[in-house]
Amino acid sequence: MKNLLLSLVFVAGVVSYTDAAEKPNILWITSEDHGPEMGCYGDVLAVTPSVDALAKKGMLFDLAWSCAPVCAPARTCIITGMYPPSIGGQHMRSMVSLPDDVQFYPWYLKEAGYYTSNNSKQDYNVKKADKGWDVSSNKGHYRDRAAGQPFFAIFNITISHESKIRKRPHEKILNPAKVRIPAYHPDNAESRQDWAQYYDIVSQADAVAGQRLAELDRAGLTDETIVFYYGDHGSGMSRSKRWPYNSGLSVPMVVYFPEKWKHLAPKEYKSGGTSDRLVNFVDLAPTVLSLAGVKPPSHMQGHAFAGKYQQAKPKYMFGFRDRMDERYDFIRTVTDGRYHYIRNFNPHFIYGQYVAYNFVTPSTAAWKRDYLAGKLNEAQSAYWNLKPSEELYDLQADPDEVNNLVDSDAHQAILKELRGALYGWCEQIRDVGFLPEGEIHSRSIGVSPYEMGHNNKIYPFAKIFEAASNATHRDEESLALMVKYLGDKDSAVRYWGAVGLLNRGEVAYAKQAAAIRNCLKDESPYVQIAGAYTLAKYGRRDDARVATDHLLSLADWTEERSVFISLAALNAVDKLDAAAAHALQQIKALPRKGGASPDGRYNGYVNQVLGKVIKDLEK
Image (cartoon, rainbow, N blue to C red; front, side, top):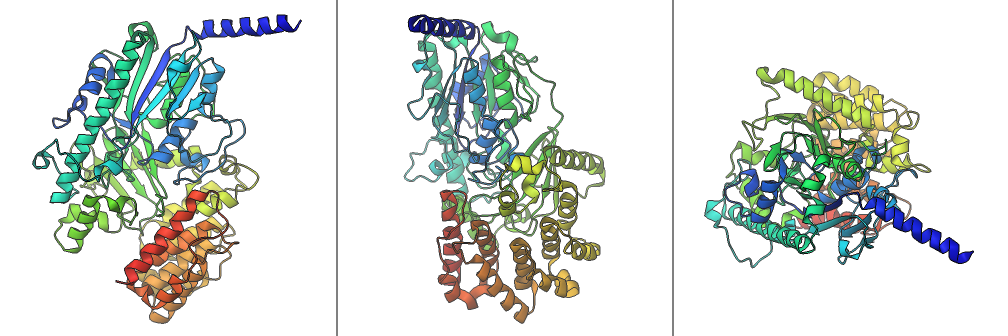
């Protein structure tokens, strides 16, 4: 009987793989930190023969976006098929939980008989015990599958990563004198060197992609395999990586369907052709499941652009930016393919906040140096100034996105359309980013952030969103409304009321100083931080001293205090500059390690901000 059962299991397995053999092999070649600066996208400086050849026999998408301009949230979007702001995974290394019934997409592929290999990065912002990979390591390879078994394989190329732009010494290939300096960057030696080196490492990534394609050909699998090539977000240069401009979100996306599998290709597929379909990373998971004949589960939020279940072209694409390593920010963005609308929900922070990892890049430090020396024009200086609440750019007329059209009479219709589309998307996905990061976690105790976000009792989205939207404009007329928000029973509404006063700066202090002082007594530490930051930055000396001391008390990372509170308070202290000089010894005494933290990778963020504050004040 035992042998009979084993035989039945074996036969069942053979039948499964026989059925699965009718499914396509799927190969994804991904490369880090580079946008569509490639020959196939018309860049005359790029030397990328491998991907150019793939595009010549396949098809490229004119405009493809990573949902986020940095790696971990972008991978989180891909692996889940869900927008990270809907699941709480938008902050770097946020490590939130998912609902039990939400699986990573390779899990569904394995269920369909696929061998799944990932070579090799994961780095997701969400936790899942079973990630769905048969193997995920630098040894992962489709050659290890069972006979007759279809494969899904990823090979991630790291040679074009941001860190390689600043590697010295570097053997120069492209002459720095030949590069085009974007309108937002200063034309100095460091910018030219880094841009030229970027092109060099993109060429190296292309060569590695060519090796993977040649390997597939040697294995006799080219005619059996659907191939994707894409970058994970824009270049590692400042204002690309980490920034949700088109330069940070736009990626190359090239697909190849052999003759055998052309019936699964996008409807507009033509060898050597292009597609004007808007493709976002949230579309990748449903697309690969569709190619495998698996109906994408209902929780996936993207649109399959190929396969059995491909869907109509979406009208818009969406992107976001939230906390980048140690620095808080909050931006949402949408494009229709030509116009790009950006909504800044933290306009009280400058664009170029100091992110330690980014400032190692020579061109970043040189950009700040030239700004402080007064050498930059308006477009080049904007990165170091406070953000406007809204931005609108014409990607055809202004690809560098330096001419904000928000106040243009001729563009009010498209501004209204894209603003409405973005706000509708935030509501549709129940964007949990309108909560302070710590509250995403505290409100989700016992459930996932996704489930919390869809529970109107725990997360009353409509009124929180309304408060955020009103808070992040700078009109003086809304000061009374901000004070009204401070009396709401929901802490997030009160938080946005405090942010609204902070955003209005000196006029808020002049007219509502008592309300700002009351923020320091609020039950929410995030309301306290926003109020104390306002007093410390815009208040009279006595108010500023009290507020600075209050911020430092919240920055004290004790065993009981959440890392989010300490990090938010330190971000505020850092922006006070010399106004915090009187507290230098107190700041030096603050602990660099503490207690409550969802993941060990958070711990370094407090240390990074604290170290910078001390270094700046000791100058």
